[in-house]
Structure formats: C-alpha cells, structure tokens
Length: 164
Image (cartoon, rainbow, N blue to C red; front, side, top):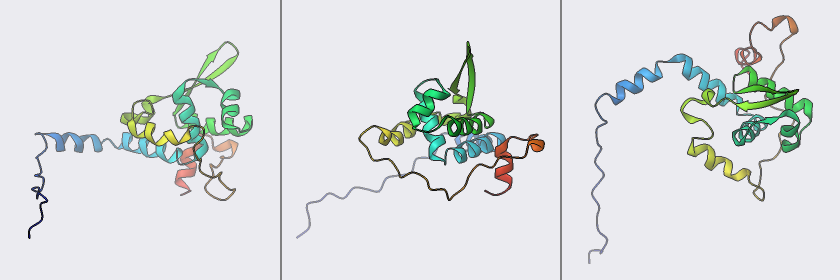
C-alpha cells in the first residue's frame, strides 16, 4: 500500500539576477579589502581580542574598564588593544586626560559586529550563566613584538610573514 506522504518536487535553481556574478567577481578582485578582512579575522582568532571587540561593540571604554570587564591586567589588556589598534580595528579617542577605545566598524566591511546577525548569534553565549570556552594555555600562537629598530611595519605584518 503506498504511503500517504506527499512527494515534493525538487527545488528549482533560479538564476541570479543579471550581472550579480560579475558584481561579486569585481568585489573579490579588490585584493586590499580581502586581505584586510583576512587580517581582521585572524586577529579575532584570539579569544581575548574577540572579547575586546565584543565589549567595544557595546560602547566605547577606557583601558581600565576593559581590563576590569575582561578580568585581565592593565598590561595584558593594553597589549591586546595595541595589536587591535595596529590593525586599525580600534581607534583611540581622547576625552580630557582619558583615552577611550572605540571600535572601527569600517575595519569589518560588510560584517561589522553591530550589524551582522552572525556576530550577535555567536556572541549570545557570552551572556552570564552560559559556559565560556576554557582559558588558553601558554602554548599556541602569540603575537610577536618586533625589536624597536624594526617598527617600520606594524607588528601584525611581522607575525603574518613569519607564518605564525
């Protein structure tokens, strides 16, 4: 006896609107934008830097407030902020004697943290009461600091070229 399930036809593929593939190809030919996104996401591979970006997507903060929010030392927080600043992911805004860190949404292109649904869904697990990933051990990739005389290029360029 035949089953009562209805058989649905396979979905038909709709062609893209005219010129879509060409528009995407031209966008991908912008090697500078693609390289910038690659560096940005590589920097966000570090959990501390990702948490800093998430915190700054909620509003501008000074380094001491960021350190307190992360539960990290001022020195460690400043170091990570310097890497993000060298990559132009964050900017510093002076307010009197204070320096406020501000997220540079343009560094993320089409996927800025405040606009992108994927960011918001992924970072939902950061709410209190949810399990956080375990802290990083000492082993693993670290940002390298170039000797003082080699500061002609930002730190991230040295690290990327070294293959780390």
